[in-house]
Length: 289
Image (cartoon, helix red, strand yellow):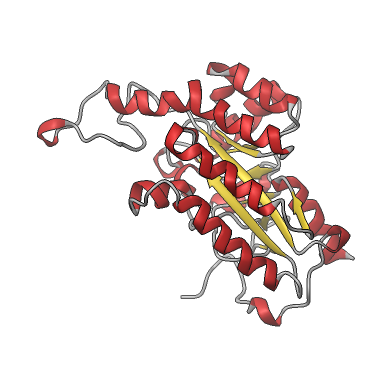
């Protein structure tokens, strides 16, 4: 069965897309800032529970996540601020209530808040996904003064109805479909929804938790991915997302490799760093122009 949300398109046969200033690659840093409920099983684990059991509270795995909020996020923010790069925060809306300082400091740096569900729980497990989407959007809007334009489902999960509901609730772009290096318009029942290229390959969860790579892997992979997209971008623009989580990339033995990504990319002309909404606005202007 073909993809129900997009027509097939060969990227090398499309009309060329041109970035502002003749840039080749739009680089999109995303930091996933989540809240895990200590009263539930953890979203992920780094340390198995002895005897193969499940426990609540799961103290070591909760502490692993909480380290990211207390330390890892701020370490990563220091890196991006030093390079003058603004990130998009993929934000569980509940963080506005429980870690408000984190959201406030992100806003001071001009970072974008992208909706990432209310708490770190897949949309398929929510009793009313529309109400969860509404609660997520309204909580972020109330705290920041601006409704989020983008959406990423926790775990990139959707139901078959999610894109249609997102559009109806005012979302303009979504990141769950990691199937292209350029934005494209998705098929929805009403309105317009754009897929902005997120990533499974430059994502610290697969790199470190699923594939068990050593710490330098995120830099080496980002460098090689950038080199290819930069070459291809001479003909038609490419988007390169780097997706990270504070409790993974923000630890001491990985942070220097995160820094090295930006040191490397900033050597090149023809690169523009964008938030998700900026990519959306550029793409909308390019296809309408």
